[in-house]
Image (tube, rainbow, N blue to C red):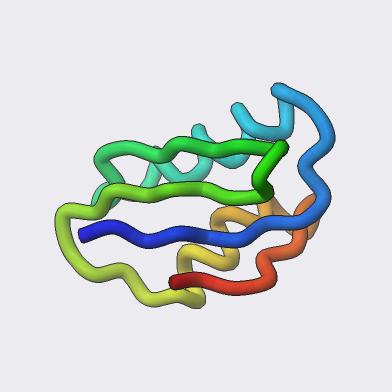
Length: 70
């Protein structure tokens, strides 16, 4: 299962790494490809995860704004 998370506020590679590490810390996430240039995180999941959990995780404690998930 794949999901695309749309994220605003990432400005550097450190931001990308912070979001990637946070998402990959979830047990259901096998891979996360995060891009500040496109403002997205492409997430591979082993099973369904509630969008609220993905939003909370990708926002990294309010550092970034998740604008949508597909």
